[in-house]
Image (tube, rainbow, N blue to C red; front, side):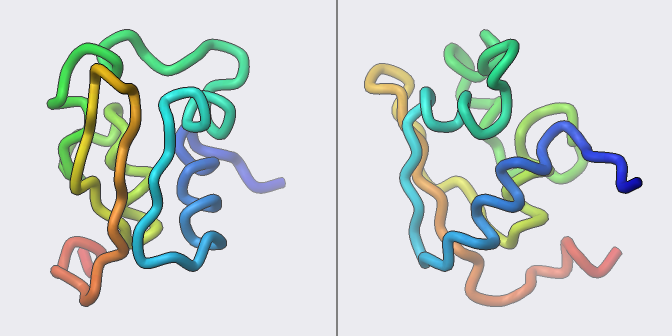
Length: 95
């Protein structure tokens, strides 16, 4: 049995989406990742939660970086995120 990690839902969604850019509302993100608990409060209030930071996997970055995407825009007021597919490896995934 494969153990699922907290952010596997967004990784799988982005990998299978196939688009060069993906926009998700916070509600859609909730449905993918946190159907029982909801998006963490800090994600709705703090832009730092959306940082493309592979060193802090407790934040959301683990999920989208593993899918080879990065966050390019967050709108806390209108509650949406825009991801762009990474064009080439930055070396983050080779460690």
